[in-house]
Length: 531
Image (cartoon, rainbow, N blue to C red; front, side, top):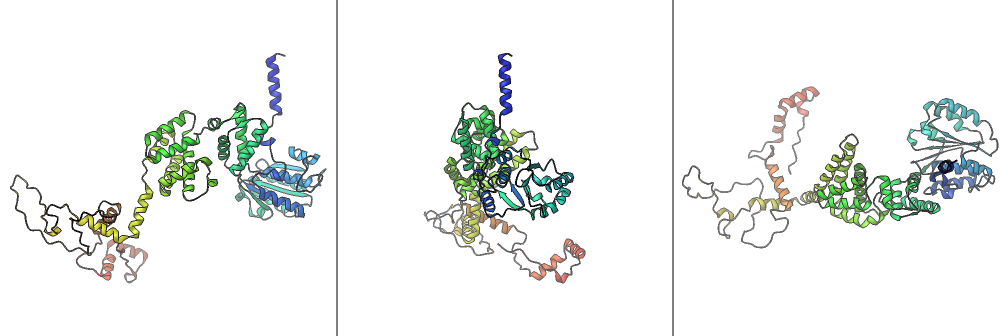
């Protein structure tokens, strides 16, 4: 055999014997269940007190340890020194259960064995006593995939099983399980594993494999796992295959097809500066290095989410996407933008992501989103201005009155406004300029207006009396809208009864009253409230 054939045979043999990280470092005891201490403690206490249920339901997201906990419970029940809360993991029963070869601990895939025939066979086998162990344990994974008929066939056995049979169900969608099944099980909800625990576990695995890994790489892997320990170990498995004795943050970003965390933070800063050109350049740079435009927008939305959480007062532990070292930058960005602007930015990104899923112009839509975020208005300042106008309408009306009544001064500053010469339109058709006419008396206003201060005062006006202030502009808009409203106050005041009579005579109102059988005397007219 040649050297090449010998090397190929060795590689084939090594590949056949290789076990992936997620299986090789699977928890074997209750104390090794990371992030599920509440479940482990409850099961251990049940074994100590002898209150072991006949049916358990483990629910939670993928990769959080449901099947591992079921195997550990089976080992604790069938260990040669048991039932014990701490299985030895060295006896024949523990070793066979760990490898899945025990004849009395049966793991069933609910997605493949979901029919009534499989459940009938399970019921028949459940009546037979275990061959070599203390108890017969049925572990049904993805139990929500069973059919309705299969669940009904399992009800009686699940309610009164033989004393030597235990059922352990695992599912990611408990809402699909009938209530009749749920009421017969002891339910344990498995929480998502926090990023700190995932990082520590990945570091232990990397050390055991003899590979160095950067702290930032661990944080990125923990964040991308989204609470799933198995997903983080699968990502580490890929990195171990391509890394050369050391894993860096660049290796993780290249593998996942994402932009570096620092680049995402810089993109958010440039968008806050209203710099659309630099934002597009950063997006283009990320895409050229292998990142997907949709992934970059997802990262940006996650970063905005963390900025929003920090802005409303959440601690650094509640950040889901940003790295712990970016807490101060996220807090500063949140103070610049405000919550309302952040919410609007996330809505833009969410709508863009929905459109990108059904469009072939992903890059164009991503560029459009970047430009829209760069041109987004400061919604927090606008919301504060509206709140100020509503909270202090008197000051706003005074500011509007100042803006309406202050005219450019053309006469001596000491004269009152009524005595100043009025401007006349320019003569048309080359006619001579007409002599100035005496000013007309001012038209009485519908509500009293405070007289303006003389123009000779040189003291600077405050924000409420400044005609160019935002509050004065809002008040002026409200005044103009009230004057142009069809229901504006007229010289003759119409009674409410007369208004009601006129409305009842309208053709559309009369037709509606006829259709709905409403008598005219039961019609009630509520005029709009005057601002």
